Image (cartoon, rainbow, N blue to C red; front, side):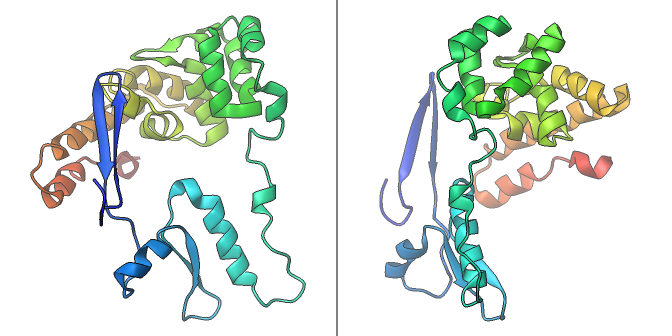
Length: 248
């Protein structure tokens, strides 16, 4: 589908078909011919002095948005250089060339399947050693997750200790892709992941159980929303699940 919706994408996920389409955000008050011009991220100086807004863009272009916003904010200031973000490597990219072709070697040393280590390399880059060290220190963390065999238990611990995960949905929907890569959307993995997190964060059985219960309710609400006839009722169904953060 082409036209005002800006395109349609269909993905074949091993027998599952997923599609997406929708309007791209633009600036209010401009004509349709100009919408495409601002569909990509652009820094827009606001009427309030010193305030810069960003119109359009996606999470995948956050560094471009940041660069444009910084450059717009310091424009005209004497002695201030342009943003350097494009020259700064992301975490995991500093020594990428040293590790990118070492999947087989690292897998043999860690006693893990090569495809598992290859995925860890794509996910963590030169920080892969942080995950592999967890698995070496505790062999139980080298096992695959229940319901998500493409992930290691060590990745859950790493998500908590190095990536700031505090809740079950932080791990299953944000630090990993378990929620979108499995038919059960992470529900089958939730008890084990909660137990792994509990050992690091000091949760008792009640807190771990509450995390699992809230996550299952969120997935159920999400499924229910997809059966609704329109966006309004779908949003109401999805938002009906309690937020675990409110119960902490």
